[in-house]
Length: 600
Ligand SMILES: Cc1cc2nc3c(=O)[nH]c(=O)nc-3n(C[C@H](O)[C@H](O)[C@H](O)COP(=O)(O)OP(=O)(O)OC[C@H]3O[C@@H](n4cnc5c(N)ncnc54)[C@H](O)[C@@H]3O)c2cc1C
Image (cartoon, rainbow, N blue to C red; front, side, top):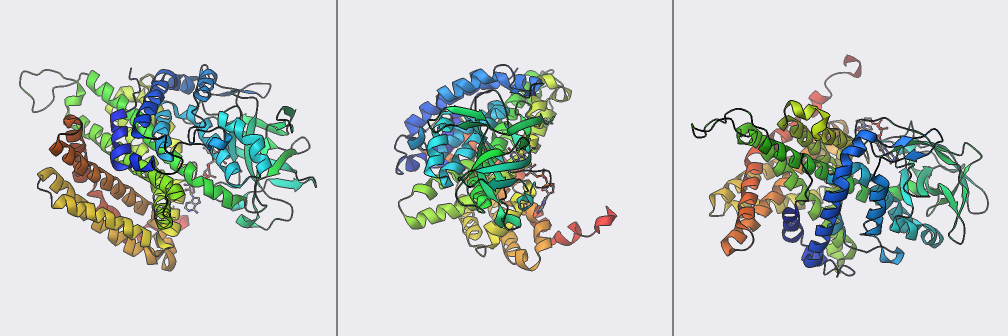
């Protein structure tokens, strides 16, 4: 049976060499995040992931969270104790504001740690992820009173948080939210309505749960401009901080679903017994705007879920491929009999595809996390703005592409196992099922792609997109001029793909305004093209750095050679897809829309 081990050497390489952890640790307030401290933190996190969370992953899948007859929700065996340890070790407040008890560490480091939680037990980590989102919303726009009342306990994990956006008629389109919030004249509101699909809407980890809820006040305008954000605790909190009466918010059922069985996905009823007491966050009617500020981080985190689950699927596939003996591999010595399947070229192709895409996605995500840190704290205003624009461009790519690729890679993980992959006991199928949600929640892939073509590409006339494409072109030129033949080959493929990306940007920028249906028809291929290129860019940078280390005798030579070999695989076997995607983007619109709706 495979056991999860965090890929520490790889994580350190990406943190230090590609994402620039040393520079991030120079930013104000991040002085503790030196590469040495980071290394110790990653070691600690990896132990918790391997020893505590990974063994519980399969338990959670089999047992699931359960709603009992008395309406309480119980978590699978072992989860409550793991949650207690998680909070005691300070992981909940890892990247949160020290003012409320957090450790204030950079997003870059939090990203690497978070990857381990996603790999070892995605369903467990969702509680923390949603709590972080709720903390962020209150911290960004809540009043001081709300912050003081709720944040310290949330940052410590004494109370958890949820995000209540979705209603039966309001999924991707939150303008359709109908939950009502009626002012009571004393600064509080009473909420009424139903929310569906609420992650960790109820559980037995903590006594209180702080729900963040989107709703409308009676006089609010229609559409997105009339939505407000409310804090609605499960149990009311007295002024002295003690717990008071039970609030009128109840989990009325849990969904039965394909994966992440240990994550309770709740239908929540607000106000069935007189009204749920709530407190507005910031100003009325600006709730959606606040949500979008924090949604960037939530979307990024879901992208990391894709990386994390794919990594776990890869590790399991490698372990099985080394162990399973079947068939004589072609082209090896005549004397070799049946051998482990890892010797078959097609198994190698699958493992290489998994490895290369995971490394690429990880690098893109960590580099984006570093940009988020710089956007918040860099001393130079122009640099802050540049990093912000880069992070905003990359977030739908991290979310959309990492999660889509995770579907393919967890499926390959099953394929490597043959029939045993389809049988639940190997665990490969769980990764495939768990990964499936990641392209759906926090905005589906289609919604990410629309964001990428509109707000992130066309709105500034393509300036940010072209600037990043230009950087990719520079790396391609540097590689192409290299004496080493492997690097030269990578450079040639990256240069071709970069031309394809340029063509796609040039087509997309005007099309968003002049041919919006054709632009949206090509939006997901455009997203995939960006993911492919962003990954190729980072793999190429990694290859250049690895070649430099080999020349200088720095680092582990086997690791550096593997970096170059993996980057070359990415360049030769994956990057050529860029040309095809560009045809689909620039020419596919008409055929996508070629049939009338009734012809389907
Ligand atoms: C397990 C799970 C956990 C969840 N957790 C939470 C949570 O904690 N809090 C919460 O509030 N919600 C949560 N959700 C809800 C989730 O965010 C929504 O399911 C998601 O946003 C999609 O909305 P929908 O299901 O209504 O699909 P729809 O919006 O009906 O979408 C259906 C299809 O239409 C496409 N589509 C819709 N509009 C467009 C458009 N404008 N352009 C192109 N394509 C479009 C979509 O891409 C999708 O393919 C969760 C859902 C699940 C399944």
